[in-house]
Amino acid sequence: MSRAAALSGVSSSSAATADRQMSTASRVAAGSRLVRAVSSSRRARSYRLGVGGRACRWRHRAVNGGEVRLGSHVGWFVLLVPAGCHEVHVTARAGYALTEEAAMGMQPHAGTDGFTVELPVPEVSEPSAPPPPGAAGQLGRGAQVPGSPTQMRMGFGVDVVGYSDRDVVGRAALQTRLDQLVRVVLGDIGLDLTRLHHQRSGDGMNIVLPLDTDITQALPGLANAMGARLREDNERHVDRMRLRMACDVGTFRAGANGYEGEAVLSFCRLLESLPLREALKPHRRAELGVLISQFLYGQVLSPGCPGLNREEFTRVTAVVKHYQADAWLYTSPGAGSVE
Image 1 (cartoon, rainbow, N blue to C red):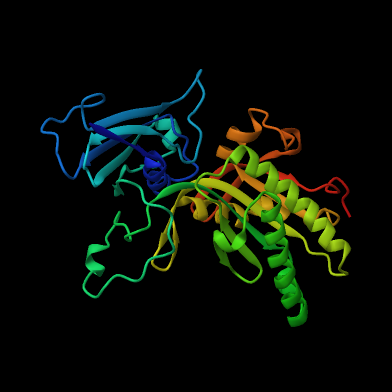
Image 2: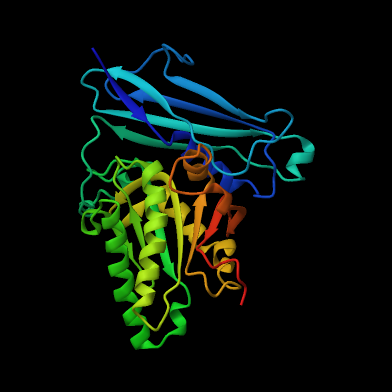
């Protein structure tokens, strides 16, 4: 009897590692991924690829003479393991196959990453206590804090525009208004802030949605509710609050001293990117700027899921430090009038 374990975000992890090592100006002509999974209770004696083996390999190729897009690529696979298996050790390795022209004189390096998936996957829990003395050396690369599995989650961040321009009283008022606004917006889509993973930063907040979130409903719901509730809030105050908002999907886990994984890192990078920061400057009437990842756009807007009009989104390139990715920008009504 076998038990199926769905392992997600494997190539996202390896791709993210390789992307950081490769200049974002490079164009990928072809890439390869190799993932090997080993059950802790039983090891395969032969090294076989595909069905019947413990390794799989896939490539991201250019289509119709084009190029493999920049950024991370995600792969999904299902692994059957023996009954009674408690964990699966996974090793992922990424490499590049570039033409001389695409390499632009640079030498991208392959990267290897490893992590452990615990079976069965437990329910989401609060961040665990710090490890006991002497256990620090065991928490190396790829190690897990007990009780907090890695999962694929959707999350978003919000940030107040011009927060530091206010005085002490004004900043305190904005913090209160932002907290109330986020609570109401989440309530509009059936969620309770107090039951969600979230981080506060004074002028902003990061929120991670539940594991079973339907992103085709959550994304339109969040964007529309945030815009509507923000307008209502501003009608009640002299000081207009304007917000930046960024959304993405990726790996997430609660660590011993904060959140880990690509989800929070990604939407925080989008939130800090120049296209979103510059979007509202020439449009003083616009109250909300939203930047969503290429992945979310492809899963929600490209197929025509109801709630958002893809014609109102503009494709941009988000660059922050060593991060570069395509993203889609939306500004609230009134953005067409430059003041």
